[in-house]
Image (cartoon, rainbow over all chains, first blue to last red; front, side, top):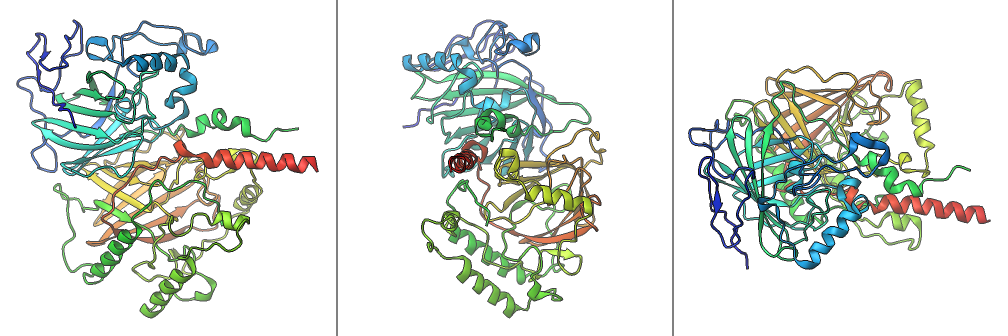
Amino acid sequence: MRPRLRLAIVAAGAAIGLAVLSFAVMPTAGQAPAGGQAPAGYKASRSPFKDGKPDLNGIWQANNTANWDIQGHAARQGPILELGAAFSVPAGLGVVEGDEIPYQPWAAAKKKENAANWLKLDPEIKCYMPGVPRATYMPYPFQIVQTPTHVLMAYEFASASRTIYMNSKDESPADTWMGWSRGRWEGDTLVVEVNAFNGETWFDRAGNFHSDALRVVERFTPVSRDVLQYDVTIEDPKVFTRPWKMSMPLYRRIEKNAQLLEYKCVEFVEELMYGHLRKKTK
Amino acid sequence: MAIFEKRPSRALASAVVLAALATATIAGQSRPSGTRAMPRTPWGDPDLQGVWSIATITPFERPGALAGKQVLTEEEAAELEKTNLTTNNQDRRDGAGTDADVARAYNDFWWDRGTKVASTRQTSLVVDPPDGRVPGLTPEGQQRAAARAARGYDSWEDRSLWERCITRGLPMIPGPYNNNYQILQTPGYVVILHEMIHDARIIPLGGQPHVGQNIRQWFGDSRGRWEGETLVVDTTNFSEKANYRGSTDRLHLIERFTRVNADTVKYEFTIDDPTTFTRKWTASIPMSHTDEQIYEYACHEGNYGMVNLLSGARVQEKAADGK
């Protein structure tokens, strides 16, 4: 059975937005604004395909520390002593609604274990495809290429990408790293349902994880010319006791010469992964 | 034969693909170019969008037996396809227990290299020089080629970019599998999704200058423009590590994409690298419409082949030392 995930978010201007759902959690003060609706009076420009949909084309990037830890966290010492202040961990308010991730007891223990063995276990360290939603808020830009039938999200990290099939009922033929994305428009919001994950990816460097039962619902809403509101619902009955949400703004890279460059990180991890197999010089 | 350690990400419904390709070819022949308007995007650019396969059995270079011949007759093409099917498309298991047998572990059940010659019936994908052969290497190019040939299994750095799962790179060349490419267009961009080792190549069309000379990339830095019906893409800023047939960071790649009918985009590329080749040369590859789609090819994530290959080499050395 597929639990319904549709969010009924009521955004009420500057006032507190309250989700009235079975799994609703009171957002704490200072939370990222509840999304899903553009501010009154803002109308996004339309797609050049003349299908009447908003135009999300562009190069976008999150500007937060969610990739370090999607929950609120103080600054802390980094794992490599020699890197000192340059590569220690910056603080962040977190992007999880209510700042609580509803792990099942075994999973809470596993998350702690993941965090304790971060360098050994985090797939990012090995340049593996980062999965969704993590790819969105890694500290690298990504480009949206939008057509009426396909929306490509091309990420700088690891040359990962995913295609969102619009109004498709096709199922993935196999489990994947980046998931299987199907999209639809709800007003000016691009709603993407992602499934068929292989369970190998994480949410962040703090050990937050999921299983292959992960189902993600993403909502991309243009709230100004250069900002997309990004709201995500996470559901994974093998790992969590209820669905939970995160949200953040995504900012357009407005530099005139903005373009994705390569971060083909495989060559940066080969020594780490295969170094023990290198021929020893006598 | 190269050893392909990595299993293709999917077992293709090959028969379906091939049937689709065959149909596309026939349909294409009934609609010669120029007889009807080519599709356009809503903003007026020629429309190259779709999923295209470059799988073909046409050899990259012209075989000696066909010297002087530019195009096969229909009968010769049919004969070549038939021969190809009987020689390649079999489940060979002779020589069990030998290296050759292991190297054949991926037989044509796994491959997806097509069964058809190029729809143009050209005798080689290389079309210039007119002999259909890649021109000779410069002395410097020869030195580098010799150094490459001497490489073994000391480390991953001795292995190809493909085996390392870094990229299949540029230009687009038919391979044994994952020959599908998807083109998407928006105003100002043409995007080519490469299934092989998952690359999304984003080509800006806006006339922007190339990035600075000190930015060197595996895919270089591409800039596209329309010349009539043809998309022309100039790529510079290659990393010297990108190494296409020995090319260096001096490589200037020029690609031309032209939709010649509903089911075919003609893809031509010219290799200009005076430090490596004694002259410029050009290949032409038809891209055929397919109803397939692009799937995730997680290569590095499952690269047990590299671990096994290096482990095997170390074991062999140990055994040799013990003798």
